[in-house]
Length: 232
Image (cartoon, rainbow, N blue to C red; front, side, top):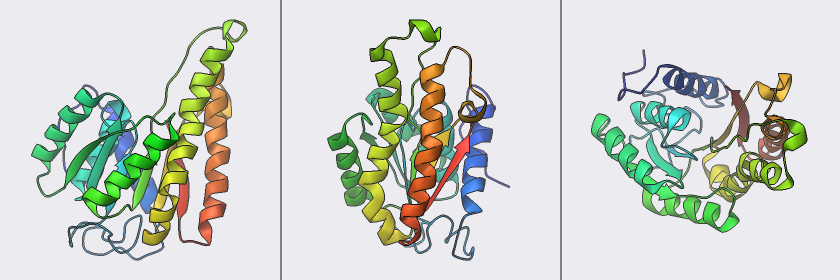
């Protein structure tokens, strides 16, 4: 069983975090050993010799992202929690570090709508944690309202964050993930398949993430990089 983590306001983000980690473990190409040493990426690139690896989570300090961060730390992974709300990131880093002192946890600023910010976050992760095994693209926004009332600015903000943001981070992380034979996990939604009333930009972006992930999986296959989605 997975260890219990710091309390959350509700149970379902934690459940989703566990499902994401479990789902990703089904795509390993290395055999499991020593508490998931091969989980998601083969040999650990971490600066700690007994760490299973290094995970970078976008939007990793709140809600589902926080639950994902918690679950990887519970398994002993070194962790980069990223996002735009630096106060929330610092709070999350303190809580998870206290709960799992064997995991090395850092917080990094990351705006997924900025390519330079994405590249800087990956570079900082490599410098401070010694590598990268898993990229979890979790950052996203929703704009609600009737489709006929949605203006271009709102449409573009959602797609730039939810879809293009995932691409920017995957592009920045591709080379270190190739070195570790790692994994890209994109958090998406059932909206990609069924549609959600009043969330037309979000639904379109999630469908795009599904297509992005399939293509990333093809592009990464020859380099040992796995790509997968987990839907909320």
